[in-house]
Length: 264
Image (tube, rainbow, N blue to C red):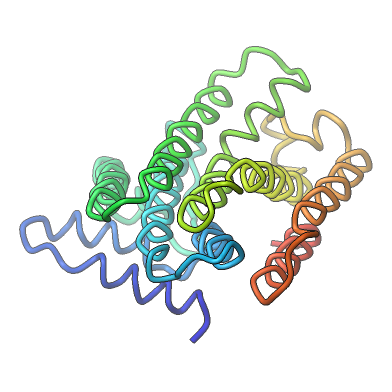
């Protein structure tokens, strides 16, 4: 069974029906169990495997991280934020359930992630990594929403947090679940992957971002410089993996290639 299928099964198991709040449960499941790419939980599992840890230990952390990610997507789509009516090809949560219920669905997923993490014995470093990632993500969103300065430093700070924080959390948590001595190297790996993901995203969303006046790598540096930054980020990520061999390392290298050249 592929890792994405195992993640789907685990997420479904953690989202057992709650008869005390049926609409809340339905709206959380609507956004969480909708067949996303699961890049962040897969990354956590892969780093754990890369460093010699066990998937059984890592899976609850991977699922909690995906809950945090899905909560952020629900709130990102709200009219007060990005005002997107579609998410992954279907109506956004606030379109399907109403704005108030969408806010509560996001709140519920974030809280459920915390409860899932706290139910695990040990691995305090991994728990902290995910909570820190969640807060850094919100910090980046705040910087983006209340943009004061269009500078290279502001751009990098926003993207390292708004997008990169959960990539960083996945990699650091994976290290703490297997070999904590590698946490700083995996932090650098996660930051680099996060920037790689965001810069390719900026290329894909160029027309929309320019129309809305957003600060992105493409609107700030232009397409050609952004492509050069993407190549550099991919090389840096690959260099961090250079000491590692085996299936997890190969899969991570394939992920770098996929992020580098993605068209979705």
